[in-house]
Image (cartoon, rainbow, N blue to C red; front, side, top):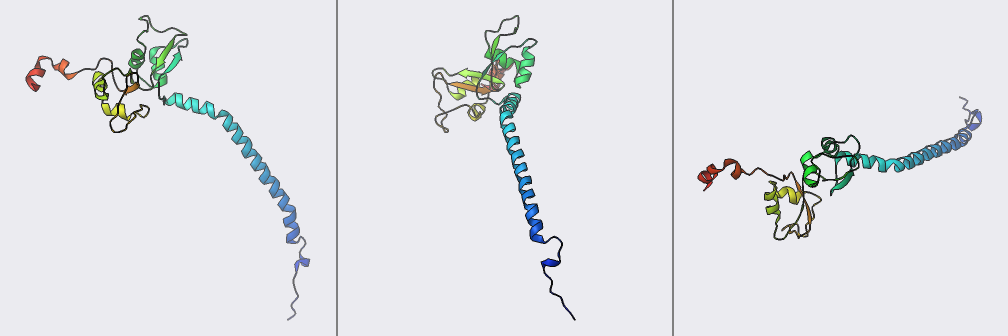
Length: 187
């Protein structure tokens, strides 16, 4: 048996030459992909503020009330729907709304959630505020943007702003609904 030694000379395009010609093309392709990725990232960063602003406004995730300039064609109902809160919450946050309704260019306060924005007065407690507005005290202390200096006692200070989620200005109290029967049943 006659065995010939094989070596790279019998190949028309030796591997090392093919690799050397393809390697620069691979580098150019990688550089092009990297450049495209950077361009896309810069474009996304320019627009991220627009996207976040839209998303936050859409979901009404805010820690405090905001001021809104009424646009032509706005109604309390359309504004409430835009900010995902109740019409009553807007009315309660704006005691000075005219009886004739809102008009373009008026500035109104929009609370962060359906409920009440309350300024703490002397001798008030979370429990007394919750009772005043027919809300659950746990909703007040658990509202993520209400701040307390102690997470066990939940102390509040006069002048502090509290959001009362689900609170109403005129809560229906069972005593008032039952009237005279209340005394007979519970006393």
